[in-house]
Image (cartoon, rainbow, N blue to C red; front, side):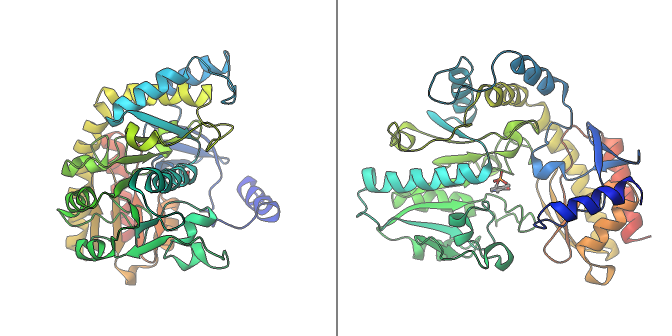
Length: 401
Ligand SMILES: *Cc1c(COP(=O)(O)O)cnc(C)c1O
């Protein structure tokens, strides 16, 4: 056995099989490139599901993390620390909101959004106790907790985890009439991804997000945008909602907020919403820790330059143009997405998404399949045009020959 086989065998013997990774064992990474234990190099076209928007080993983020590592890394929220106020101020400003509540993983931030919406419903909207309803979309992905999988429509993500948390109603994504019909006097929130990532990078029809905004405002319902994967530069704007000039009541952020260095998530909202919490009512040991705040502050500083949003726009246009040419060959059935983010439906005759991903891996490109014959392309936003073109050449070679 070589080093790769030994590593995979040990992982399979002692790690639970809740993932099916491609058979590559990464040892180091820099920018948009990863190197495996055999010294082979791969172009990373997944970027940790957008957690690595600013690339592997980003110098500014590593320097910020290293400096903070030497000062203080954890206080718990029992005490104040000197990076917290700046983090809250800067993140709230980036979101155009009054307040933030930091957590660690995306799922925790979604749980926080759910708790916030329910508490707001009871304390502010006046919904009778125990009746709060949250409307979500089919094919959603909001994380893996027992409550969150309760409103998943993916049988793999949901089966065998009941009894499920009540209080959620599922409507078809992109269907405003269905959403309007589902809203009643007990509805406290609508929770949506502005672009559905795990579902295959599904972009809703134009006018949908503004329509959701209008309906939720009219009916006194919170609009919660799960921007965990879509925000922070990926689509060419700071938030995917920006494409349609929509401002939700609450942003849920994660992934790239931690710069691929540490898990950092948060919800951001105005005081009339996030102000519902009193001491002891919600929390996290690691949420808002000094190391997380230091890295996230550097992420926010990077985003404030607009450089990566601009790169994602410019390289994204190129990516979508090139993928469009593949649609012309018949090898690809359709392409969706915005910015440096694409869901590519491969002609099923050419193999499953998994098979295409394995063939790309053999050519030094790492992508991830999603349901059936779809692959996702989301390289780090630091990728050069030359590397992007090389990656697309490999895709063409695998699909067209
Ligand atoms: C990844 C993701 C989550 C969950 O984040 P974790 O950090 O894995 O818990 C939630 N919503 C969306 C849209 C995501 O992409």
